[in-house]
Length: 258
Image (cartoon, rainbow, N blue to C red):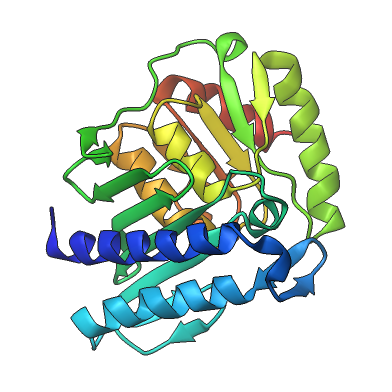
């Protein structure tokens, strides 16, 4: 395992321990609201601090972009961190959330870790070296036809413009796929595409920390990822389409024209 990935895995597992302990006593957590359906707990902040502490000890000259702490430091290396992706699920005891850690070098994501502390599932990738699920090689699905495909997605909350466009996309994909799932953690959804549990995925209005690790997992597992224009600006635009190569080719035009 690449040394940078090794430290990221160590940080993610430490985060998982904190999250699992907190999950035993959710009622006692202090919760604040950042925006519509956008919650943050003291656990989010504690987990992010622990992750940054471990990575900063190992790489003191690296920068950070965390969901809770924002951008810190000026370096060609930047760790992109979502301490709990799926906080609303976590607060309800709905077991679909994860920690996402990625490292970007000069804007290109090179390391990725997504850790699901509920199931002790670890998804990892190093650019050019493949993707792994619990240390076993991971590949996207081999499904060929959209009508047989299981597609993941997420509802946009922040913008009415996104909501109306999204509902048109949803209607189109519902008609032409075998099913849609919306569990509420974009990072884990992307990991599931890489693992072949979904055949495709799309969502609007995401942040870099939602996508950075998951999109590298998919690429290293043999899948394709783009923005709605078919380009690689998804981290900038917040709109992402992903899937195995065959399903991606059918899903992208479907959502792009909606």
